[in-house]
Length: 257
Image (cartoon, rainbow, N blue to C red; front, side, top):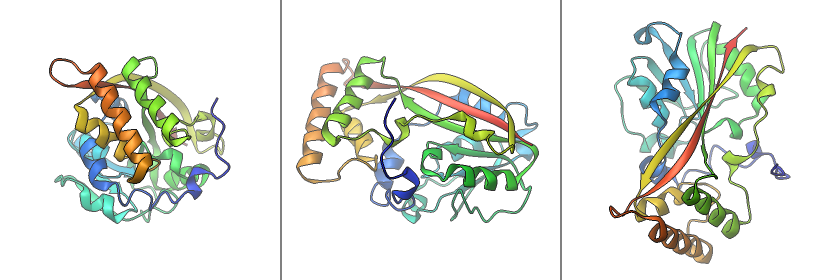
């Protein structure tokens, strides 16, 4: 098990640390498998009548995928640069707000989702806020794309990041699902997992790394990471010049009490 850093992630400037990464985030971060979006929405009723809140929405990757299914989506994102970099969608509305203080009305939404973001929150405070805005028996969803280290290329990518930065990627820290039910606000926690692959050429692989807030943006440290990733891509690329990053997409769902 990875030893957590001395400073909790929610104290490491989560609302500001991606300000200089927004364009790379929008261009190079993966989406999510359709089956994962199905798991979030399944059983909630006619999708066109749903209101969904995507908390820590970033540049709106998961928000747009949800909106494509018919719901009205509020993409809650405290970082202005990330909101500006988002591609518009007719059923997605971006708002400034945090997980711990959404600014939304009581019992106003059918699904609260945190995709690739919950590890940055003050988790129990955030869950209390999510419970406040959810309608009775409505749904909580927590979703991550976790790199599959049984996949040789993907393992090589992660090893380069660990070796060159001396740190563990934030999203790969262990998550304890018991926090969901710890305060009696949610029940019926379910876990679904899906394999998802992201094709990347050499430039996109480097851009994927640049989108991570724990990667240096310039200087010798960045140069070493970029050079190692280009070498990794050349070793693994197919005839089309593409490599494949493989993820295990993990989706937790729970019902509001």
